[in-house]
Length: 209
Image (tube, rainbow, N blue to C red; front, side):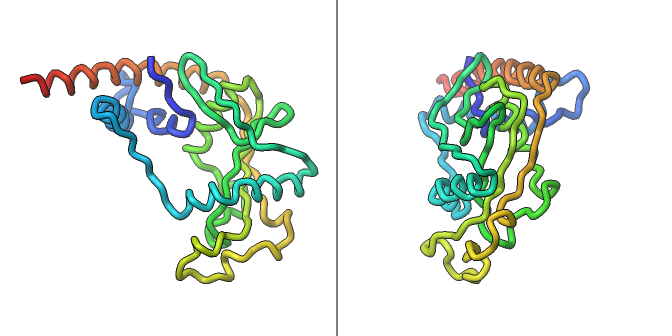
């Protein structure tokens, strides 16, 4: 059975329109794409300036979080896998998983927790809680300077932010573990795996001459 990555779990967790269905149309589209990538032997790596910043400044964002929480968190490098999912979280704290999100600029930084709520990140976090057997998950939106080479023609002022007090540059969104939702993950993943195998066979069948 294939393992779904925590970061892409939300793609199959959307609700279908029919009450007797498990997977939505969008979920099936995503799974069909996975089957295609497997058969044709490629992986679609999507990149953007936002993702590039996240990679480049991750250590600085962790330092910022530590300065605000008075902690000494280190970047996690362990990947965990169970029967359904696989994932590598950013930080494993004392009873809590942390996921760092480095905001692109002042204009995109969520100043309220409600602004930072995101279903994709939430499902990712629920996968991490499941994998590490922890009861709490926290998204930490961190605002640090954008590397000069990524700014382009945007206003430098919204990217040069480290003169702002550290506590104003971290927004925390917190979630509690929910075993009902974890059971839902298992059900969806099992259905997704069955559909994935069907698509593998269907693609092969339609290209047999």
